[in-house]
Length: 591
Image 1 (cartoon, rainbow, N blue to C red):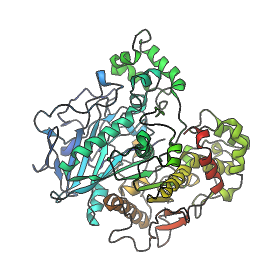
Image 2 (cartoon, rainbow, N blue to C red):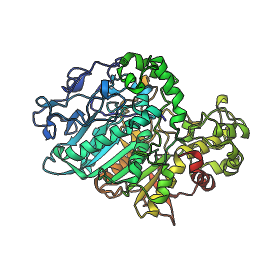
Image 3 (cartoon, rainbow, N blue to C red):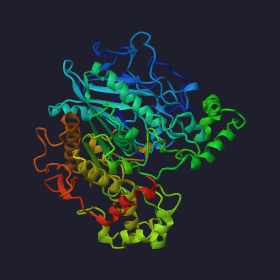
Image 4 (cartoon, helix red, strand yellow):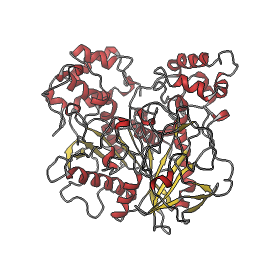
């Protein structure tokens, strides 16, 4: 699952350190990647806070009248003996005032999101962006968890621009604080085997996030934030992370957040869970390649392997995206589909949505007939694996009828012109894309909203149906495309040739920028007081975002091409048989 994360405080992208920077400790990163000097920011001497570990100094940025506190450690560096261990709380005070004026390197990951950015094992840091002028108020907090398939991404990527959404919150009279948190990725954060399970160090990337939430619970008040008004928020793997926190420890409420926002991710995993037995051969091969096979404690031996050596192993196609969260009976207590059926989740309001054509990002290409479709759905290489004996019943749930695949007012047609031959048969492509979008994202979005509503907890559901610039028409509205709208990133910061993307708003009509403002303010309004509709100046033609209902389930549809509305309510009933099939087979899918 590919996604990204950014903060818009830097004017340029730094050059990546190919093997990671040296260990830098907790004294900031002055001059390391441009920082405040490169982007014209000035420090006014007044952005100082006192947290449990000492004094932190940030800086003031006049463009948006905001104060930035960047690269704040929330855990001990997970290096040396702390590699492959659960994150450890900081057990010391800062040596003098901590200079929080530079972003930390991204956690070591593998993929396009890491291009142009420094990386390091020492990466457990967070950032706080707060509007100036509210020093005597306690503000709600939105905590952003980046996506990237749990294998790439980071808090300094320019595409996740906290400055703009915080500024929008001020403009509409609902000021919020924005926070972004880091976590370990790929095998660094999700190594799995019998040895890992036996040591109790499972799902450590998710535990990194959890420790960041605990740190914020204890310290966000020093920044003017209200620890009782925290919303956790993410996209793709970041949204799935929100779902894992909503169901963590069998749904235990630790009082760390009062709401959740999930963009293309859900409390039920986007993939089938694997077991330690399935991961064991990969772990054993890593042990062999590092010379740890004869060690009495192979996991401890891996902690002693030089970074360059183990990174070279992880940075191969065999391991980059192999390891994912496992059901460990602890953080992930059991299949969360069972938990949702029993109401075993944190009962807080949510936003949960997906894009119309998620499956054009996750579905295979080259599907030319029904058997190809069945083979793709039941293949061990599929993200969500359906046992082969269910293949025929799947075709009944997803019949080869083009109109069935298309939600109301979809931008993706049944008939294609100039359709790439490599994509396979057009109608089978449409069928496959509908199924894989549903099985990875959309069905579990509907299932979560139903579970929340059945438990009497408010849920707001959406379908994003706007194709940004640079997306081929035959891909419709694929994964990730809502992000630039939510962050109101109309200048396209971070979208460039390095990442193979263009500004999503380039050469598009003004309705696109209007939609971005509407969506960004709706998100900020929900973070502020749990009401995505209640702000002054809301676009007059837009429908109100309805609370989900079992009797009359509805989505809000975000459509930058809809004349005079930008947002309208629709019945959440499309592909009812297929989506219900997926929900009914959750345990068969292993999630």
